[in-house]
Image 1 (tube, rainbow, N blue to C red):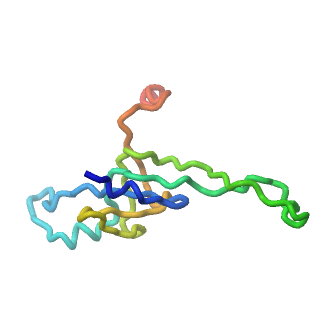
Image 2: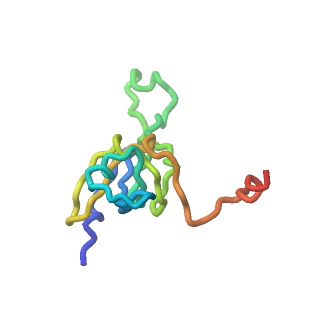
Image 3: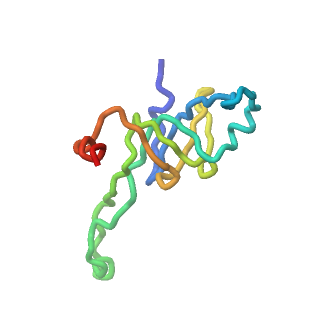
Length: 130
């Protein structure tokens, strides 16, 4: 079976997320129609692809272009979000696409509120003791 996402290239600070299905039932037991849940402010999903990051100038010499020198290749500041993270993101800032009957959302990193990772970063135990 071919991976339909193999040929998708994410640009800049964009992130491709596979939304997680949220419950259509409230805490008190009321069932909500799908249109209500789709318009919630924040959603969760799994990060499937991540762009290269924010482009930064490779050459700090601003006058190089006037001397006829070609600028170096573009360098990127990497994103904090990684593939496999579970992200809480603002749905209003996303653009929905469908690939092989699967729904995905493309968002900018600034729409991500937080991520949950399976591995624990170094020093996290010190924070919990505070």
